[in-house]
Image (cartoon, rainbow, N blue to C red; front, side, top):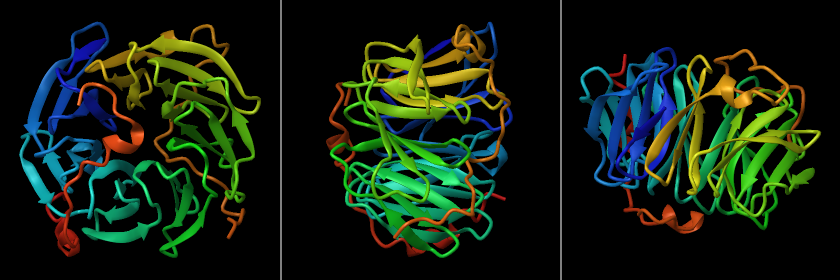
Length: 352
């Protein structure tokens, strides 16, 4: 299935329990579609969410709302039934909001263009953690739920681990020669995989983040903009050349290319709630829904059981002390500056 979005998309997310998919556009619009096998997706919602582009979005509150982030420094919560704004936080960050990810049922994290990561508690209705950890834009984040540690990657070429229990930056890697663009936790929490601008996958061992333990170069020279964990041994990659590949980790190998979105870069990848569909967005202004079982035919394995839990790792391990593609470092820099975020305490006041 293919959805013509009409404009360049920056992010997508699937509803946690229904056949709904949302996309955020360069125009600042939030679009919501209902999809089903063997039928044309139907647009349910079109909201002018932001004055600048809608770079990041996630379903929250059991799917009743979508939270979006923008270079206008705002974070907006939109009711998916009515399309009305539940609440808008104008100055959520001091710079452009570039990434939003779900952590738990009641927390999300957001990252901005100046390297700041914030954690928002939807029950306490406040910003509960703030980490000024990087010098460049936050490109991606993933969560180790067992130990409450948030792993982030940045255009400054480093990876960070923020401890949400202690509210401290626990560790940060040495500078890589590459911008780090995407991250997943694999091998039952023992490995952290990062996609880079040169196409090399960097493998870090949990607890030893200062330098990578392995490099996989077979996807070079095309940047790996998106990583999506299929299971503990396989990851789906989205590359600058539009190719979506299934890659094995330890042993490291390209199992097979499984799809070609277009000749343009794959911006994001996501699974539907039941893992029947793989969603991809690209600079060709389309959102494509791929039948995952069909994609994986010939890879020698079946689809793993889907789990709603976040990536986790063993807590027993210690951690050491607009239409043409712009460059990764510049496309997130044209941001108006925000103010103090003290007003954030009321952000989720109306989500319950």
